[in-house]
Amino acid sequence: MKNIKTVFIHFFDEINSDKVNKFIKFTTQAIENHNPKELYYFISSNGGDVDSGFVLYNFLISLKSKLTVTMHNIGSIDSIANVIFVSADKRFSAPSASFLFHGVTLDINSSCTATMLKENLSRLEGMENRIAHALSEHTKLTEKEISSLFRQGEDKNVFFALEKEIIHEIKVPTIPADSIYLAMTFT
Image 1 (spheres, rainbow, N blue to C red):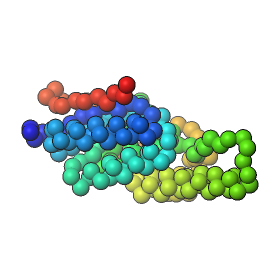
Image 2 (tube, one colour):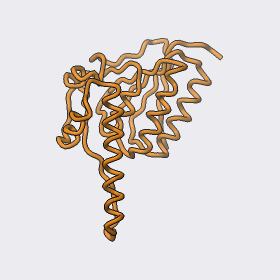
Image 3 (cartoon, rainbow, N blue to C red):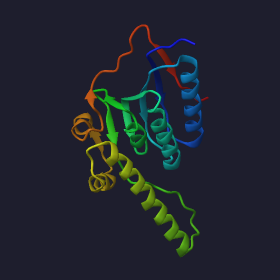
Image 4 (cartoon, one colour):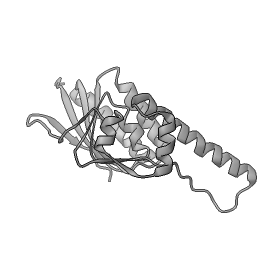
């Protein structure tokens, strides 16, 4: 097994349980096959399922004891993808990229009891609190600011992301010529 410094991985997809399972499997295989010191993700995601996003967030956090995890926003990081993004040790963004924060949505069927409505509201509030806590833990955003961002539901540019330490630097994504570059595809 070759011991290399950095493996670059491209991920451009939504977040759901199937994609997260494949992401974890792909990442585990990349580590086993290349034994890198750093995993460098080029990422863009419109978000998706909150629970699946937290599975991936916790998986990436667990890797930080073995190697460096780097995220580079190459398009847009939306919704729960923000939580995944901030799990990294190092975070960068392409100059033309953006970040979208919005409240959690939940599909419910049309026939619903009062108890079910309360349960759904509790679940929504719990998910938003988990997201706000994770984001505030890794950035300069406070939980109050994040709650406000949820209500705004608007794109934020890289300058906002830099000011709030969502990213550490604005830079054009590059891959050194002699690097390992892997693209996750889910067909």
